[in-house]
Length: 253
Image (cartoon, rainbow, N blue to C red; front, side):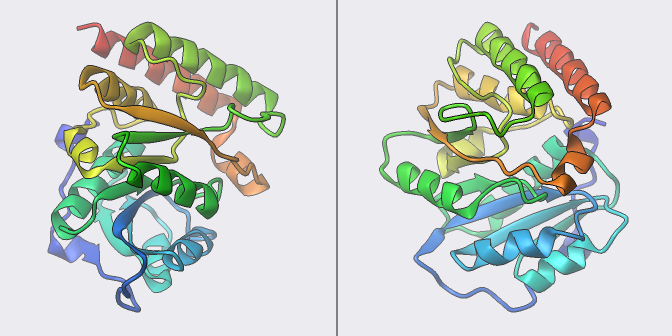
């Protein structure tokens, strides 16, 4: 299902944080987290982010567990898709909501729900964005040692980098890292229509087509047993390759 077909969450599908929102040094930042059945870990992901950033938005993409309740209890706003529409759709919903809801926010962070990303990396990327020299900061697990990245995943991600260079001209070291920071201007240019993993390639196509200024920064992706079970299976790799081919066909039009 494309994002054009998604059900935009009405008021009844929006939950405010259980403990309210307190001001912080980073009141101009909103973290957007797409999630699907992440009830086992989402509170542990949200809590350290809320210790630093005032605004966290989790998008429950049709989950069958209570990750929405867990995220709200941990201090996040929660927007819910009644049906599973895919990570790309969830990101777009979260960004749309955050742009409308938080007028003072100038920077938008995209962050994975499975515990793979580190708060300190997000903070360093926000600090870089605040310098005002770029529109987008992209996390890369390959700017420093990538020995912690599983071999099969490393090969697939290298293929994604080649695809990105071929289709967009962007010379990146990591094309499918979910940790990103967008300025408000850059976030407003996004109109993600590819709901699956190919949305990452679509985002980079927007960066290239809109001539947004960008920089990569080194980040460390934490591959836990949980995250490997959730998203590192061989069949998932096949799905990503298929989505990349779909994306290439779209960008060639």
